[in-house]
Image (cartoon, rainbow, N blue to C red):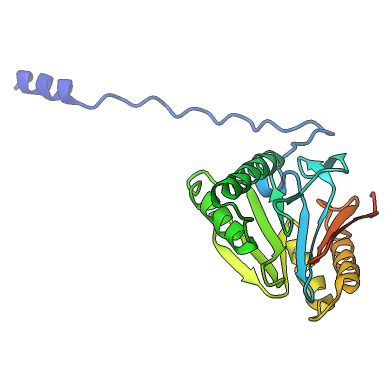
Amino acid sequence: APWLKKTWARRAAPQLPPPARPQPIERWPPGRFIVRAMGGIMEYNGGAIVAMAGENCVGIAADTRHGLRQLMTVGCNRQKIFQLTDQTFVGLAGLAGDVQTMSQLLDFRVKLYSLREERTMEPHIVGNMLSSMLYEKRFGPWFAEPVVAGLDKDKKPFLCGFDFIGCLSTAKDFCVSGTTSDQLFGVCESFWRPGMNKDELFETLSQCLLSATDRDCLAGWGGIVHIITPDEIITKTLKGRMD
């Protein structure tokens, strides 16, 4: 019937438009290139930190390079090691802004502990406090990898390192952190030996730091070494390659 044909014609699917013609690929002219981001946020400023134990002494060392966007060096006097107590130091590797903020917060909490408890905070207590600080920011973590080095009340070395969310890992020989961790592990395993005095510890720690930073373009440009003994703290600066 004619009316049936009209009904089916009305219900027919509309015609799809013809496919668009592919556009030509836009190519970069000769001599142009795209600059892409390199590495992660932990490699933005670079850094190398190593702590090592000796006989009734402990040492911690770090490079002094202040990098920017991986391959740009803007200074060679950046502080990465901070003294918390008379016998405890902490090294912070990572994003420069988080390193400064975290060092100030650590200093505040250590002084507050001294006022409340009327005693000096031991290195293992500093480690537990630092672990708690990192874990409470686990959903938006600090971009820093701390290393704690110090002497306890029995004048025995204490070393520990952390990850982003505060997992504490102690060591009897050495701890490393920063972008030069792989290189530092290799040289420290070769050079470290038990029973070193403060002079041998300084020489070993210095050679390990300089040898490792020579193999990492994100760290170096000099260094600083702190040797902690029961009687004194020895601080020396190192001159490294500037290329």
